[in-house]
Image (cartoon, rainbow, N blue to C red; front, side):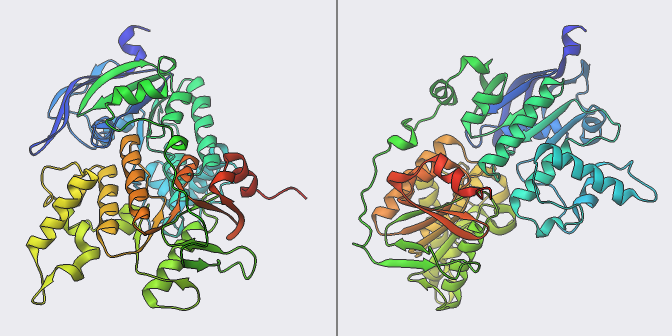
Length: 491
């Protein structure tokens, strides 16, 4: 095999602009056969744009696109990508929500036709789910829209690794663990290493730097639409990787951040709630100014608890205590967060409309001023806040949702795993912002699948099977205790 044939992908000087915004400024990239390539960079660095080019869903403005040694520039599209064995699991999931798991697998494999196609498609996707995610709890007849975002992500990933005879050479995983808990993420990454060792190639895009450092053979760093560094994974440490990304935030481990000392009982209780499955025992209690973590395996009642608190506040129900207005930062931004047809400013300001009404109408100047203020404060990367919200990268869309909640009058902020797809620098900035707002008296209920984020919390409740099974003050918090509480003890 010659050198060009050993490269599945060879990109040279690839550029892409969206109007005046330069997404890719001349990118060179090679993907070798049988390697796991890590791709990192801040939100807006160009990672997802580059992967859309490689998946055939975007055409570059200029540059050479070589696949298996052949120059396909100008004639490369989704069909060509599939024919050459290249598939992509996008950060914003592409499943059809009104179809079943089996029917979504069939869309991916048009050769599944004739009598019994649904059974064959269902068996195929179930076998792959069993291989990647043992104990997944997904049935082929489940309607996608009825599944949690974590299970939808599992289906999307499993579907990309299925095969009906067509070649499969490269799978691109764009933030594949962003909605998965630690255990499920480990299952996926172990599977990736297994198939890479068998000769398949993978591109792993992740803002969880530990995943990239532990599982990738080679790491490519992007910044401002350019590749700024490429090295073997073993040559990077977390600090050198962050430095290569150009992070402007002082890099400290989360555990080393200065901690606020809050004495429970010295401030009033603003939330007190039990889950529907829990009549007695531990209740979730939040005092004013506290940051409360919700932990445990994904899908065990954390989101349901947040929605219960939200519903009680909105409907003024007295079934549980919620003392103050609330705002929700959704983790599934495409379904529950952004208004797709609105501008960035409109998306930021929608929770604060009451304060912007002048003579019975929304004051556009007030709306624009609010948008500009929060663009500066939370560093939303856009040349114009009047652009459509979908012009932003996924991480910057999430910043807009944070800005919406924090710009409002809400005294209680509910966060449903909101950091999915957000880069490490932005995370640290948002953590500081959350602590700053908590110092002013705001209360945060924060569900996260990232254990490290819980070290920002004053108190953490672990959920299992819809009920609270552990109540951990910050000085007692550890990953071992969370995992131990997350699993039933054997009989």
